[in-house]
Amino acid sequence: MITNNPSLTPAALTPDIKKLWEASAPKILSIDASEVPGSATPVFTVNGRYTARGWTEWTQGFVYGSAILQFDATGDERFLQIGRDRTRERMAHHITHIGVHDHGFNNVSTYGNLLRLMVEGRIPHDPREKDFYEMALKCTGAVQAARWAESAAGGGYIYSFNGPHSLFADTIRSLRALAVSHKLGHVLMGEKDLKISLLGRLLQHARTTADFAVFYGEGRDAYDLRGRVAHESVFNRNDGSYRCPNSQQGFSPFTTWTRGLAWIMLGYPEQLEWIATLPDSELTGFGGRAEVEAMLLRPALASCDFYTENTPTDGIPYWDTGAPLLYRIPDFLNQPARIENDFEPVDSSAAAIAAQGLLRLGRYLQGRGDARGDRYWQAGLATAKTVLSEPYLATDPNHQGLILHSIYHRPNGWDHIPAGSKIPRGESSMWGDYHARELALYIQRLAENKPYYTFFGGV
Image (tube, rainbow, N blue to C red):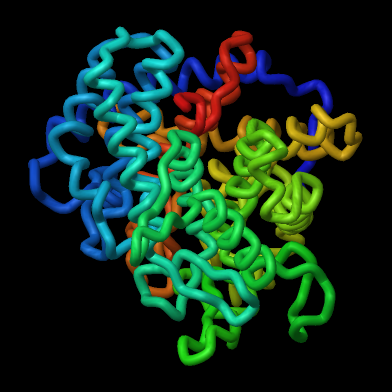
């Protein structure tokens, strides 16, 4: 269980965050210098150098989004130029990519961050450039929403790259694309000029994910622990009925892959923050504000509770809470995560994502006078303190990764195992590095009383 430190504040993390940005800068420059246009996107490191894995190009937005965040945090215009130029040159195909569920990752991290900076006055206002970003964001939300499968329960979901039968927990964070597109006044046009609400599809996907990917201790199966998350939910495409949980990157359908858990932890609080900006009239047709917020809050609370209860004291989880050899690590939940062990790897990327989810949920509850918010807030700061510091922060300038000890796909054996070790460790992932930067920027802005950082800040 995570050990909270009540005295920890955003300001107290300022030295760690400053060190992170100092370590981050040469890594972004190194990756940009070594990237070949048109080649496969950097995904994870092997011996400290970023390599590609041809599955889908779901990490390219994190590459260029990292440069944009670096500029946001430091004001160094070299990184603005990299982020802006590479987005314009290399990201267009992601806007109309009909084969993936990752639009929120790729396009909100790039076009969305650039639009936000312009609206905040951080970069010069250029009407044509602003129109360019807005058009990209309008299109990406509609394209993502079109990847749609109906469910027997009367709703539906954005299906994963596995096909129309498959809902991934990850996709909760691609709802950002629909939210931004909706806020910009866009809709998905269907047959006979049918106008399909992006807000409607966002809420339907969020509800389907909440109902089937997240468990609540209500006896759905023999392993129904409150807050447990299934990476994949499988539906019968003949009638849209739910069939079973599954896992692509976790140990089993009945254990919790911690990065999938982290996506849920962050995705729902972000949507709660966004829904709070909408007028009541927009939510009337979906049951009203109280019903919508309750639907989003339930999985946020359950998943964040599960994480805090099933993670070692320093906030860094092992790659799956049911990994088969965890029992070989004595009392593993009541001590800091053991990076060097012979049995199961930790996953720092899950911690980088989860910490932001804990912080956003904590702040959301605090803003409503809910005393539970303090607990999540402090757990988020405790986790951030660990993941943004050594031995997780990679200060070696020759290592292109920023956050060490990330795991990509343990079942497929894609992660590098260094000489002398029995498990993967010591490497980084593009999503882990990006989300650590996002986490650092989030806390830094709070410490400096800067505008609150959200994915919808530009709209």
